[in-house]
Image (spheres, one colour):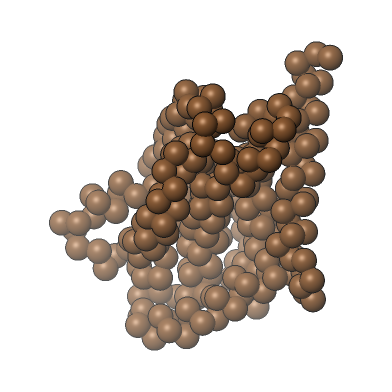
Length: 257
């Protein structure tokens, strides 16, 4: 068996793992996968009621503005949070048979990506009903998805590694993602951030992905070169760092699972 055939075999296994996890998530659910569309819509409705009155003078078509931020951030935080337990949660497979351990992390991120793709249906529905413009710039959406997938996969490799060694990281990361969410300008306009603190927000990678998403879907424009360059750098560097950390430590996982 060639290396290509061997890798294809593992990717077939990953596909089955993703299918299993998606089925498990919606097991005995009446609406099933439709929840991936309804959940962002219902969340958007609640948040719009709460926050739109605060920012109605600053943000036109607040539901689209909000959804663009929520969908991207929920993908990054959800996939990375699930990846924390990707090694421990598959301890039975790891002890029983040889499967490249990165498959378990990759499957969690791919599963979250599938949810994101379904959630985009909710965004397009809201854009249609609020009469937002569907421009040619929507064709840049796959570019954003590739970048945010790379970033999230790199982050997930790091978290999967240290989440295997330090169980308390699961609890700490929940607190971190809550703080991360409130500093990612999801619910409020970036313009309200004082200039003296703006550099801190520039260091937040989520903001740059959200900015690109809003340029494409909310403003109907081409993302700025600055935001694309910064997002690309974050994606590549985080993925390379994540792969490096994971590969340097994966042989130690047997001691902890």
